[in-house]
Length: 156
Image 1 (cartoon, rainbow, N blue to C red):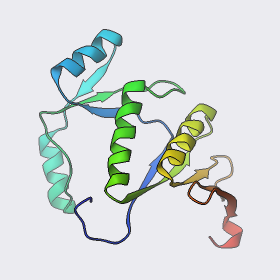
Image 2 (image 1 turned 60 degrees about the horizontal axis):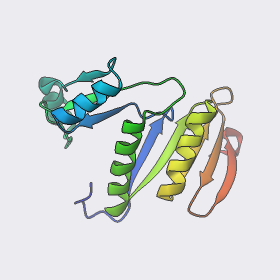
Image 3 (image 1 turned 135 degrees about the horizontal axis):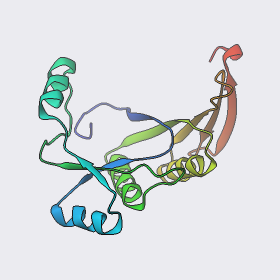
Image 4 (image 1 turned 30 degrees about the vertical axis):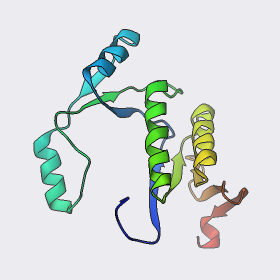
């Protein structure tokens, strides 16, 4: 996307507010994670599946079957290593002129705060959808520092 000449480059991230996976760059990084969290989960993307998706959907995916993915789900918390990798990747996007907006479907206060802080840093927009009240959306634009609630009755 960074090399694309489009004027309006944008990622719309739909999330529960919790980044839970990142690539592991080398064996040393993997060993460091295991020493801190012996219960850690790693996997390699299935080359056949990735190839099929790339071909069928004409997608350019950053996929190397030899790269490991670190997967960590922490209840109501964000893993620090995954958080750091998430921030690095997001900042690369911003440097490349790619805007990131986030749609959050979560009620967990800590995870909502995580996304709020992320979007403040990235100067993006967060759309918060309450699972109990799906016809309303809280929009928080950190570039203009405005908040508004949209609902389906207003034909949004």
